[in-house]
Length: 376
Image 1 (cartoon, rainbow, N blue to C red):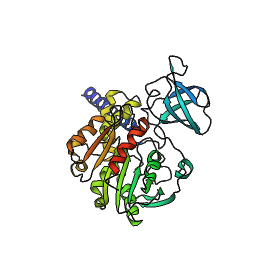
Image 2 (image 1 turned 180 degrees about the vertical axis):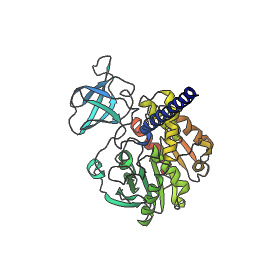
Image 3 (image 1 turned 60 degrees about the vertical axis):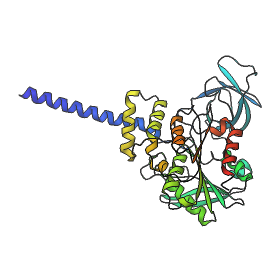
Image 4 (image 1 turned 135 degrees about the vertical axis):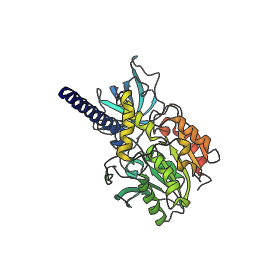
């Protein structure tokens, strides 16, 4: 009898230990999505080594990422630069690639440095980066004051821009000059968890599903300052925020349209993708999803069942591509097919998550021009 009791106690202890290990593993795996570092490239963007640097060229490790078309930020410890297209005719070895070096924004780009490509091309603020006059404003959100830039202009249709995973409010500056030339006032928001903004109540990202209320606060600010209509332009989880605000905000009747770049339409897929990029074993991915759900209260849903997609009443431009490793392209296609009367899908091949402008600036801005023309 005593032996049986000892065996039962040992089995119970083993089960409890296994459960605790599973819980810890799930929390660790989910941190890739729930504790992002604003302004730090996503783990899906591999580290590259700088091999050589000249005044107008940089040689990088040859990788699918370093071969991407377009214009990107290049960031490493204490340095930020901007690189343009691949220069296939420039001398290089079989394991390197040469890109045009547009400029070094700050720091020094040296051979041997470890860097990553990022969609965040500009650093600073609209004045220092683009030469655009702007106002630094404070928006009162439910977690406290939120810093934002307002670039004023003549129209009474405002664009509110909101960044996503792996970037800061500097990212939307890639389209700010384009919007300013078309006389749209632009309000660019930092939200909970960003540098200079209040911490989220639980310290976790909710992948846009609760952060949208900070965007709602920005909409209220815009209306108080004279906005008659609002276009919400969001990247990644910022696109999730825009979609939620357009269907849940008390000011949703002021929303004239949405621009959704690389939208996160299924948080579970994004959690899995970011955990995988951090080399979490496949066996732990279900634990990562369950841990994320338990820590944040997020509810699973399929694209066609999302209330915000079902209730959408304004036109939306979805800009996305099949090479996005974080937010599945197939979900954007399903979204567009489910609401063909409202949703226009602009595909950008070869672009990583949140970098649709970077891969094809001319095509992106033309799609944006066509979309915005009847809304302004």
